[in-house]
Image 1 (cartoon, rainbow, N blue to C red):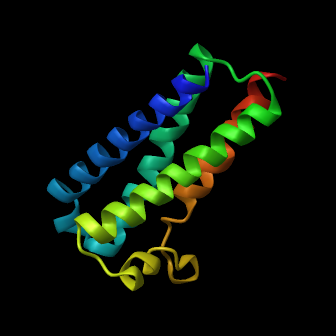
Image 2 (tube, rainbow, N blue to C red):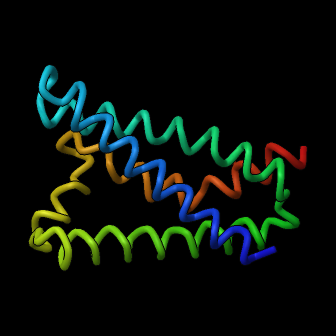
Length: 129
């Protein structure tokens, strides 16, 4: 079952890429880059809520331990992809990448890896109640 969840992470990446494409090709020009990133972060969180609900309905989590394990593995994979792709493929500096984590400056992006980490446990609790 663990392999299903590893493969499911790719679905999250596809949702994130599609969400970013919609942002870049539609509303970013109207609202500006900063607001567009905030809006697309909220949109991606909502997409992940729906994705997690569907995923954990089809493949229910067996335990709290499994939920934390899946969330932790997804978190590591997400951060590795974000920083690895961002730095080596997109050419962003480490400083640029870390600027997205300034929640106190209105950057909402840190909510994405946080949700990827705790989302499985929240759904485990909700679905096993």
